[in-house]
Amino acid sequence: MNRRDFIKQTGCAAMGSTTLLSTLTSLGAVNGAMSGNLSSPKSNEDYKALVCILFSGGMDSYNTLIPYGTTVGGDNGFNEYKSVRSDLAIPSNANLWQLNNPQCTGFRGLPCNYGSFGVHPSMQGISQLFNTGKLAFMSNIGTLVEPVMNKTEYQSGLKKLPLGIFSHSDQVMQWQTSVPQSRNALGVGGRIADLLNAANSTQEISMNISLNGKNTFQRGQTIAEYAISNNVDPTNVGITPLPTYWGNSGLLTDLRNTAVDSLVSKVYANLLEKTYSSTAKKSIDSFGIFKEALKRVPSISTTIPNTTLAKDLLAVAKVMSVRSPLGAKRQIFFVNYGGWDMHDNLVTGMNNQLTVVSQAMKAFYDTTVELGIAENVTTFTISDFARTITSNGLGADHAWGGNTMVMGGAVNGGKVFGTFPKMNVTTNPQNISFRGNFIPSISTDEMYAELALWYGVSPYDLCYVLPNLSNFYTYSPNNYPVGFMNFNGTAISTIDKPQSCLTY
Image (cartoon, rainbow, N blue to C red; front, top):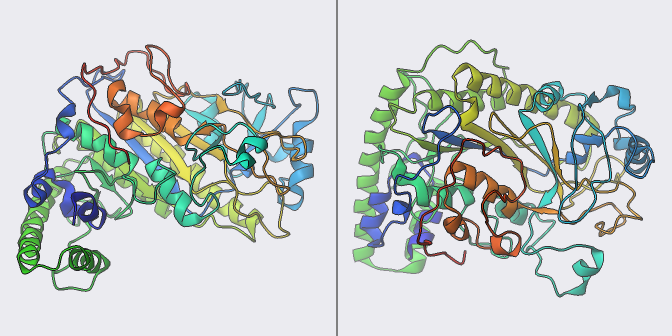
């Protein structure tokens, strides 16, 4: 049983400590790479946080960002959208929240196709964030092993393609690992924490904090998530507890089965049981640290919607507010908001879901402003994949490239980055099916690389975080993968010697 298999099966609050795993496996830690050369945000406080919101199920993101006016070629973009989407389309562009003067210049030599955009009628808060420069869209982004420019290249068999492009289980995993050619890769957030976790003075609590328990995104080589619930207050901290060793929870069942399958040995079993006992003690110790820190959460006056997503993000904000007592200079949060697998009832479902998303994200950003950390926090959304442009009669089906959002005070907002695909499926060279299914123009690697650079990962360590990145991007000063982050006042960490890179 190797270290990766062990950590892969373990995803609870207690596994925030790297030293315990090192004791078990006698393998060295990676997180010494951050030798104090952390980049500083505009606020001059040496703190940064990434917040990943997973929209699990596959969001129909072509009903979130919508062509509003004329196309680059002079056609009516909204009419194109309405024609191809038929019963899924918003009835009138007058119902959209118009985005003010969005800049959209295309990507990797492909045209943007449309010059103006609106967002879904349920997304007023998102439009406000965009129009004030605090939110940007990335258009037609998705999982890629290497660039695929058109349908001919897609069909040629000469390009490496993601495994299970239209599979929920594959794509939701690949968005979290950015290694589409593997089903057994570490998570992007986990790899980043492997490198930078040493920056935090309290090692009992992981840099990676999850509001959704065990997840792939935060699983690193030496770091795993610290799981909490959204009931974050000093009297009921809401830490996800460890089950008893002899219990039948998924965690223990997975762990024991993997141990037996890998090495049937009383010596190993005894070591595992002792390690589990030590882990439980570590969990109790970290619980105490967390509980004491939460006594210092300030009063928050921002109005918070009564939804699970909003409450999850409020819990994130509360944990951020006690970063100093927790000894945290870097934190990565993971939140999951599901319910997007809409093969039917899409119009009503999107109205309900996007209302929750828009209100929750706006409230969260406003809370970071109230706490004085808006410049220090960057929030981004991911989803399994987009959905087909054409209707199946009730909803839409699995597709590939779609639209995501990135939000925060350091975001180069008010822009649409990437290539919004031509809605006419017969003339779009990136379309690979009669249903309207687009090859991504931006890779997940490029989005994560820009976030990692802003967060403090050295350019020389990007190959550890993103093994496929060299297929899309090579770092040089003032040359960033996409352009959605504002690096003014933020120094890029440049450690002289590159760290060793994992294949996956």
